[in-house]
Length: 339
Length: 106
Image 1 (tube, rainbow over the protein chains, first blue to last red):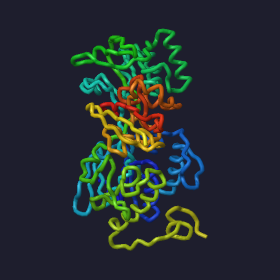
Image 2 (image 1 turned 60 degrees about the vertical axis):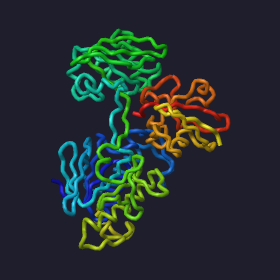
Image 3 (image 1 turned 90 degrees about the vertical axis):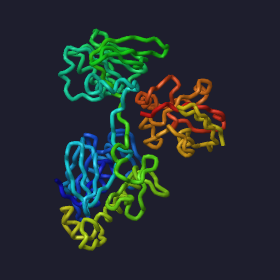
Image 4 (image 1 turned 135 degrees about the vertical axis):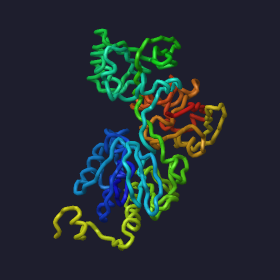
């Protein structure tokens, strides 16, 4: 069991800066995120898109902002638990017991939810019957590519994941690639490679087609795809892979007894505390009168929530406000020399 | 004010006066029309404000900008008349615009 002063759920910009604020005031913390990388929406949705409204940063991309925030955390030793989702939060005396889907358990008086719009989950096929084949013959990510060797694999999607896997699997499998339009949004070099493989007969390409139904009993047997002119093709296949990006789902947070309204959590504006003592919500996921869904608002909210954590983590100490420019204690924590 | 009709998946019509300059997505969210999630808040980064534009309107509204079609690849059951409602800005010319909201956003 990990005993810590505060647990942050979400490694997006708000979660990262909140960690910084906690460490500055002398509290320790760990961060859990369902994604396999740090950065949240900034890294998953718009790594290359420029942002223009970060104070004192005239322009930066989602990736640059993430890297800067990670750099700002360098003086501190913060443990990240990536690819883990918090499933359960339970009160035990003065503490919260928090469990992840990997079985990691935290004991902490403070839980800060910096979860954006929830956790990222893969978008799935609209065809309902796909559920029964999920993780058997229908996949949304690949853990073991060996299972596809010598088999027929039908890949849906037009982005880098779909194209990269089509190229990769075409060397040892029969690959069908299906996309809803003729343009692909993957890297041009990969798109060129796809057309080359199509020409060589290594990939069967179906554009302007989408899945309409699937057939199979225990194993997937075939898929019906339909084009814009309502022509249907039946494709025999052993596996289907869908790469339609990720969608944000509130997930287990909905079950923690918090006041939730339109996928956001209600908080006060002094501590950014929820209706549960010691559980805070900051960033896009919190809601209060006047809430702006801006990164800069998340920074402010995190700074205040961090101060509120101090009271519960150090009940016998008094929090003293200090500036980073002048406090020797803070400079020691940052590992920089005083004047 | 411009009248926009949102038809939800259960075939209910919701006709609403939306202020010019707002997006069709904002008109739905501010008036609690169900079925438009708009997770990213209008940044063309999530495809959860997906709508189908009635055919007679599809060519009248300003065309898609770069990136919208890419996002529509990820939408739930995209069709030829799919648009992201955060990218349609309401103006007098759109008075009477009708959009259908899909059964799900993801």
